[in-house]
Amino acid sequence: MTRLKRILAAFAIGTLALGVFGCGGDEKQAPAAGEPVRVGVTAGPHAEIMDEVKRLAAKEGLNVEVVEFNDFVTPNIALYQGEIFANCMQHKPYLDATLEKEPKFDLVEVFKTVNFPMAVYSDKIKKGEAIPDGATIGIPNDPSNGGRALLLLAEQKLIEVKDITDVTTSVADITGNPHGYKFLELDAATIPRSLPDVTVAVINANYALPAGLNPVKDSLMVEGAASPYINIFVTKKEHAADPRIKQLQKIYQSDDVQKFIDEHFKGAVTIGWK
Figure 1 (cartoon, rainbow, N blue to C red):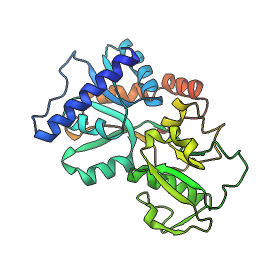
Figure 2 (figure 1 turned 180 degrees about the vertical axis):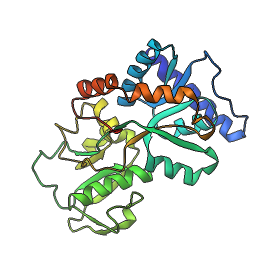
Figure 3 (figure 1 turned 60 degrees about the horizontal axis):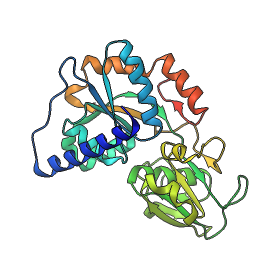
Figure 4 (figure 1 turned 90 degrees about the horizontal axis):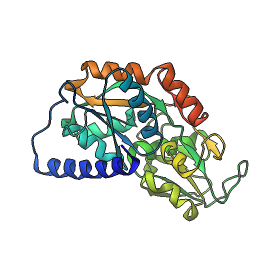
């Protein structure tokens, strides 16, 4: 499926999922034997990795259809409604925050995938230069990724927060802001385009990479390796033991996929299962 077709398919599925969600329609069951296994991803690195998984799965007789979304919210709604069989686009803190708000979704982690290190970028400051007092800092506006951004800044001693280990940290939890930074909360996907409007921005790697930003080479500072934000493969609880999930895990966590990730992303994406 071409990239354009995937995007159009994702839009249609997202619209349908939202419509069904709003009217409480019936949920669809797992795909029957021989039907495509539909896996939802966000555009960018997740889609590229899943395309490689799809290629390898075809060699084993497993037909995977990659369905691309342009936001974090719709893939979980689509999964709950049965429009897709699984998704691969979020870390556990994000899933936990979703389930806290919508416990009836009944979604579960089935295996770990990759880590996209969050990093700080700027059009105005060069690496090694200090972020000036009064700077405007763009951060994601969803709770889990916004908290992740603030913890990164706290780890760099730029701000202080109530609990450096609390992944639910928000702007309200900032206890020390000696530089008088202003925080602009934006949709995570739009932050790369907002770089001209802020002093610096904290951007998820899966959105930075498609914008030509590499967290290893282009960032002012980057998240450390000890991160709770490893991405995960998610399905409905009732499908967690489906043999196709186990087959996808074996393929995703294979040496072939690790080699693809290492060579294609050159350190900007790291594996999360070892």
